[in-house]
Image 1: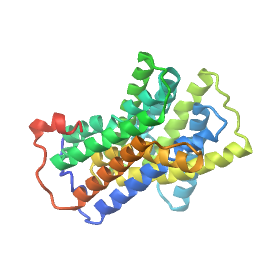
Image 2 (image 1 turned 30 degrees about the horizontal axis):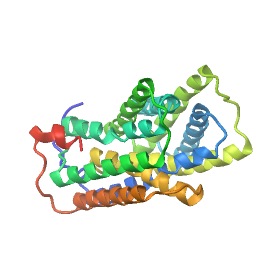
Image 3 (image 1 turned 180 degrees about the vertical axis):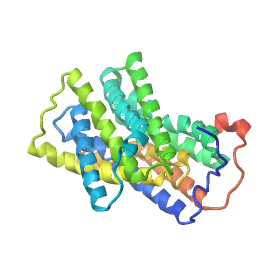
Length: 316
């Protein structure tokens, strides 16, 4: 990768792209927050869900692209390979991690993604994070930690599981970076289709190796898979990949801190799970901090974090 000079508030020449991209990213992470809830209604192993969810999504995208006369080629699969491998490994590592360590540890470690992506966005994409945005990102990060920590009582931990969760975080970061690097190489739709193909291809042998039932889903499971494809797939992955071509990479990554907030709210609404006062306050803090970051991206540009301080500022 080569560094480019890109402001944190300007990604494309079209002035409409930034607000549209911010809105798309917000919708994407909201859709992703439904995944945890939907998984509770699926009587399938994690790898089987990955195969049928992304495999079916890939076929549906191919059909849609054919109807829209969007090019389908081996170039599309080659250009999306690293993103698909990263997303597939994220699924494998994360669901392996939660078997060895607590869901709290795995989720909190995964929430560190904006730190890694922020550093890479500065170093290789020339993005600058303003001091005020770095402060709000820190508020959102701490709030996400509190939401996760307050909502789970699972105390089973191990360093092996934490290491797997760390690998999942690196893989999830790689997916975002690959999506941004695909700009100008393939369209966001082509990238989403290609990554879906590679993700399903990775989950299949892993599922067989660990002995999961990879047989065809039941009618009820197909229904919930369809809902998951429509939300996490069509709205989540498609919109985020589209948005990452229009907004700073670090902003898209920071938006993912809303996922545990959205999941907790949906669990409260549909699964009768309780929300404690600390959780509610932390949720409000995350939503408010992300709103301030959005406002900062579309408002006048104050001081930026200088490159010499980027190691600290991008980590928040």
